[in-house]
Length: 150
Image (cartoon, rainbow, N blue to C red; front, side, top):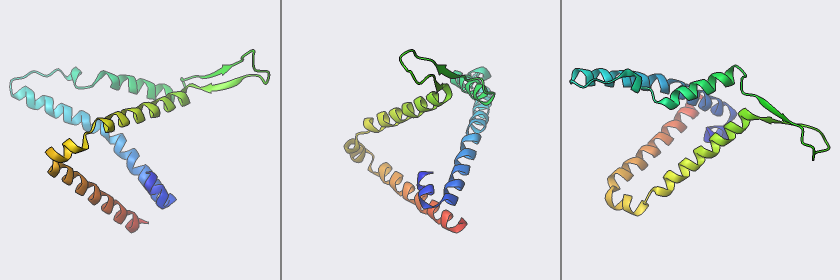
């Protein structure tokens, strides 16, 4: 999205829409795949409980999204004695969003720091080459579509 916005506001808007649709369809797609997997395993003689197909954090995510949508996450107001100017507001939802962004950045950095480039190049040169080529193809296709549509 950042690259699309750098190109133009219109491209950024389209990139935002594409990302939101992709994210919105991710959960239903995953659930359908889980159901198909469970049915296939059941025919193979293995019993899969449908309640185990949805991870527990999903229900917490749905609850937090619902609370935020309904405006149930409070805005805290502080009246400290040491501040002569009065009170100040503290958006709980804003802090949760910032904390989520920080933790996501931390997780991505941790995954990146675990990659041993020399080992990857020595053992998986073909896989690395395939990844680089597919990344370049994706970038070229994205740029071509942006130029075509805008």
